[in-house]
Length: 539
Ligand SMILES: Nc1ncnc2c1ncn2[C@@H]1O[C@H](COP(=O)(O)OP(=O)(O)O)[C@@H](O)[C@H]1O
Ligand SMILES: [Mg+2]
Image (cartoon, rainbow, N blue to C red; front, side):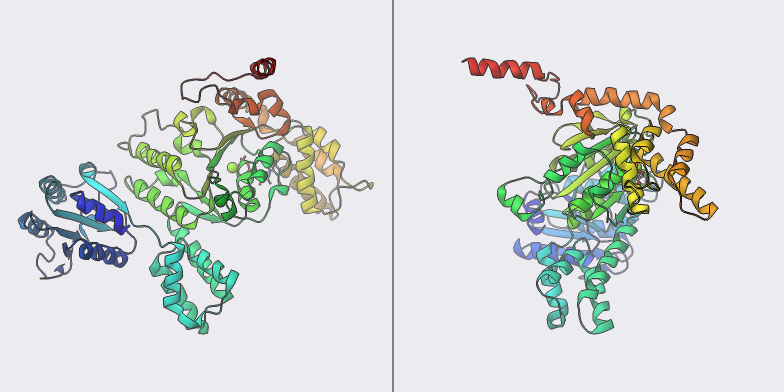
């Protein structure tokens, strides 16, 4: 981070906007840069004015005037602390006429000092950049502490009172990832105050603190995961894909030279187990799961979305390796290209920064996107390089339904799926529930349980069959959506998550594109491959 700022100072960037939830840490870094580069540094805040003289107290225009009057020949950094709040755009994304003079002066200044040795830094905990300054501003995100920095901090804070060694110490440090230095200090201080030491129980306290941080974002959620892939019926292709990559996030995989998997898209109609699969992937890989609420990302105050998406990225990267589930992304990104977003392009910009991150991220954040309505998904989302694979999930076939019944019945009534008279006949249940989704299968089981419970006895095969009889599966009205999904799968080269469909779409073939450039859709067919192989052999 310091290096980055040093470079910007040398390259004479006029205006930096540093986003840091921790003012003190950012100030320290800026001071270190100033010392290293023999630059003068001045801090201004609204209440106390400039830190060296107390001048321009409560007067941002006067504060900016000092920058105007400073010598262009002297390397100097002017750090403005509350200006960000003073110029934050309102709910409509616009600045008010009262804010205009400050924004205008910053813009003028940015242009004036562009080629000299002065640099203006706006320090803020959020990025709420007025559109007027977008061109002139370079945004620097102050990262959360790395694991090494955390280790140092913990050592300094608790010294010999730490009662953790080896693995559990590592767990503590990992749990701290994603927390600001300030929060780490606070939670450890609390542990010390309570018991005079930092031990196993502190790990829970830290995790709770992290949950709180994540909750405060309002759009990220920490989802506890317990159930592994065994709790998903069917979807064998998807499961195989996941299993092969079980250790892809390990140090060993890095040493081997494997890049971390990037992400998946799971597309399918409602209730087919997309969200469930996302959760079980995290469990299978033993990674924490974060769920991003994209709907809320775009809701709320315009302009805040951009700030929030940066915050999400920062948190996810700090917590990595982790799985980030972007559930029902069609709802948020579906209309992005239709131009009807009416919020001065905020959605597009947020979407753009997400895409850029997906493309460029090197941190092991595995993204699982789910979508019900693939038709409306913007094509750029699905371009190679952003995700590893697209999977489409169909309604479960007979044998998959059998497995889904088994998963749920075994969970609810262990040992009652055998061959005894009172047992459930999975084959018959599967046959009776044609066109049912996984969610509907779960639903009819609960319905059957209600019946049994109301009679005061355990529920039976007949109860479930009756429930099936009265249930109208969504598939019957969602036929157009199902057809659209199939057509999309062929068009986009998505793989089937289930085993049987894979033969139809020949998933192996799609990887052997003749030309991977975007506009070339020509693919090798199996026939062509066979022909090529034969030619090779003949030669
Ligand atoms: N393949 C499946 N195997 C087991 N349970 C399933 C399956 N598909 C769906 N379910 C059940 O239905 C519930 C809802 O599924 P969900 O993953 O939320 O569907 P989607 O996200 O595709 O709309 C799950 O919690 C699970 O209990
Ligand atoms: Mg879902």
